[in-house]
Length: 247
Image (cartoon, rainbow, N blue to C red):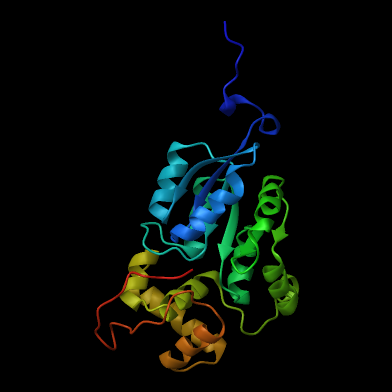
């Protein structure tokens, strides 16, 4: 009789860490895979390019840690805080590492509020990835240098009185709006009514002291809230929409 024990039945301390990677950019996906694949105690069980593929992967494969891009449009489960909230609810035992090019304090604040405590800036070296992975496994917090600088600069841990603080839902609406989506498209993506989305957008603008859509878009660009190129809004200027995006 064989004495070999299946990897999935071993205690976590005695088996390879099972990792899923999600990013909509093939080059970054390849870079993340290359950084981890030669480490004997880490096993990449799959890669996804959108939220649909990621959720399907997690439903069919046992995974310990998900390394996911924050802005990853195109999937049926959305991206950003919406996606991370879904992952934490549906797969509570899976640890999450967020990747982002955004340097907006509200994005970092919202991730931390969702208990996504390991966040890496894409502007930082991939050498921080392994440290973040083991911190996530241990339930510890790990921020790459670029993210840590944002946290320190904006005193994110102790800013409950910050006047311009946006709620998580308002932040997601603003992020998608300044990325080029219309109110109707945002409502469809977030599974909310158009009235709710419009109300959340207006609430965010009041908090920010902004009265015009053009100024809200300018704010989003200046604050690096969007990772996509600014596109014309279909409600104001019909134009073919591009599926290309950067995150």
